[in-house]
Amino acid sequence: MVMSRAAVAVTALVAGVLLPAAPAQAKAFVCQQQVQAGQNSKAVPYETALFAPDRLAPFATGRGIRVAVLDSGVDDSNPQLDGQVDRGKDFLHNNSDARQDCIGHGTEVASIIAAKPSAAAGLRGLAPDATIVPVRVSEQTDTANGGTSGEPASPAVFAQAIRWAASPSGGNADVINMSLVMTGESDAVIAAVRDVIAQGVVVVAAVGNHATDGNPDPYPAKLPGVIGVGSIDATGVKSDFSQHGIYVDVMAPGRDVTVATPRTGQRSDSGTSFATPYVSATAALVKQRFPTLSPAQISRRILATADAAPGGAKSDEYGAGILNPYRALTETLGPDTPPTPPAKVMIIQDPAALALAQRRADAQDRALLFAAIGAGVVVLVVLVAAAIRKGRRRGWRPGDPTAPAEENPFDSRTLESTR
Image 1 (tube, rainbow, N blue to C red):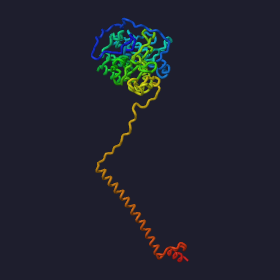
Image 2: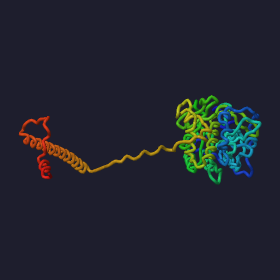
Image 3: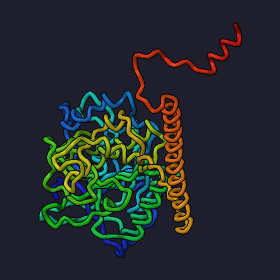
Image 4: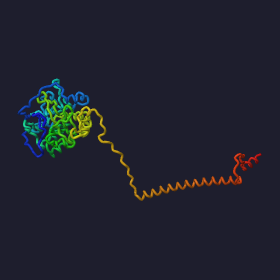
């Protein structure tokens, strides 16, 4: 795991393990221990320079788009997130307010999507006018010995959270960001993801950080219709921890990226968790600019406009390439599917009918040939007959070319009768 100790381990429980639900509380859950706040930095992060939010703003800012962040909650007390975060829901503690983050991970993810510009910080969200809907499903953290501690939701609760995030009476999200990974399949989660995509919600998920220790199949990133996101560094090279497989759709910065922390300030963090929100923010921008697009069409636009990567046009390491929000917002794509070629016309006839037609055609050809031969014979006969008559008049003597032309007896008689 290549994430800070305060970050969420991108792992949830496998299907079939349930955690007891905490009793409902009259007031919002309060963290027993606060995560350390970061320091403000005016330095422009490499990922902000790469994506240039100011260049995207004339086309879309995420206004009117709701992005659900299924994570550890989101602390909206950081000035860059003030006014950007809805109440959400806490599925770990059965609260109707998830604007608390005991480990900071969800806050960091949300800031990549929607952090407002600040004179005190170089960090800028790609979709600064989007609304963040926090959905708390995990407080699991890395420990010093490489293990994990804390509380994740069960797959059953995770599925409920996905459905709530997309429900018009719940989170009413247009995009769902899942910077977490399950280690096994869950029928409930599979069904929930399938259903929310059918409702028109774009689902984006991290592919996981275990490339060097097993590279296990990541869920929900591996599910059909989900945009799976891997991590690159500042040079555009795949992070060594970023998992690889057919589930990798696109890459985004995920090593040493700048993120906002609870209460105030920023810090640097790494993991596919932090590559994922760049894609979710881009989906929000595309959704605003092209509101009639389906999740599949938004995914196609994001992947079709990705920049080339070392893995080629499509690879298990880099997917379609490196995210390019500007191209996703501005380029004109061809049709979703290539035009259907014209159907081949097949004429099926009875063999006997075909044979009869062929015989008739042959007979017609022979008739034309015989007619041509007959006409030639007639012409020849006429020419021979004329030659014979002329020979008889001369007594079969050779003709004298110097003699005057022989008068036509008929013409002579005719002239004489008119004198």
